[in-house]
Length: 369
Ligand code: M6R
Image 1 (cartoon, rainbow, N blue to C red):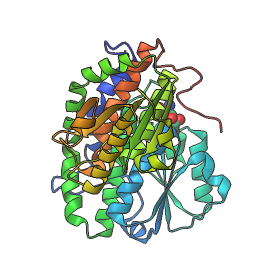
Image 2: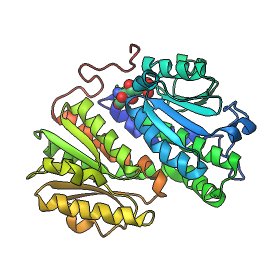
Image 3: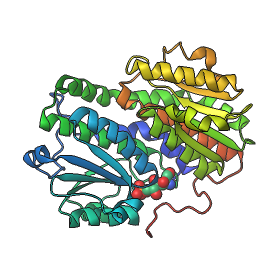
């Protein structure tokens, strides 16, 4: 049932192009607009929403962090993202005009379930983004947008994460479409890019051998740091989480702009630092800032592992290892940038002799608070 792979995780990483395509299937109509009939919240109700709050845990929380950039950009509705386990304990401000989005692969995560129950008690509508048909979280929500990743067996979430991102983009674009923002043309263009993105994910998978080779050389390290900016920041957090749970290494993700506010003190000779570089074509200011971060880190002797778009030549001189990803619109970059980090963590964990499908102390679904 592992389909010839040593681990479910490897199989699930390889299934990502299909999972992404399946999650888009039937949701983009031939004219290029979105039809999300499953979101049984009427367009007029969606137009009334004045706030979006996303609740989730772990990897699903990282998908939520990325969704915030997309939702605020395309809809101009303020969006908060909160760890489900913190949410209800701080008396959050919610009412009938808040849309709460609960993201969960399993649909059984207790913290997320308790957060959505709390939201409904306050009169908010809850939309679940979930991978498991008929599980508790979608059953208790007002509407559900299923991700079609298929069963995810490995404890570390991979294909579910990519499909959660797709679902979040769909919701953001749909809200933008329904509410008619000034980004109409961009929304149309991004829907088109999204419909082709599974091929790009496939292309990334075909180029992963050097990433595996690199990971094996780092098996004896104690720490790996991850830096990113804009949507690359949650990608950095996700890369670090994968490495923690699989390789049992100290791994931390930082917003690159925070470097000077503390984390740069951790940079020393030969520490591996993975940097997710934003597209030079999108927010070029951020791109240039991260290039100077890479220079600073390298000047302190760190080993720079740079994930950058094809054709981005400005980063090349400062990269000890350069991992290329296809050019995508800025907001969609996490769909391709996360894949090398999954492969990296999986290979490093294997090199350390760990069971990547069943990491120690972890369960696939956390049904207690
Ligand atoms: O089933 P859920 O999406 O609600 O699970 C949330 C987290 O427990 C989960 O993403 C966890 O962080 C994964 N092991 C990460 O790989």
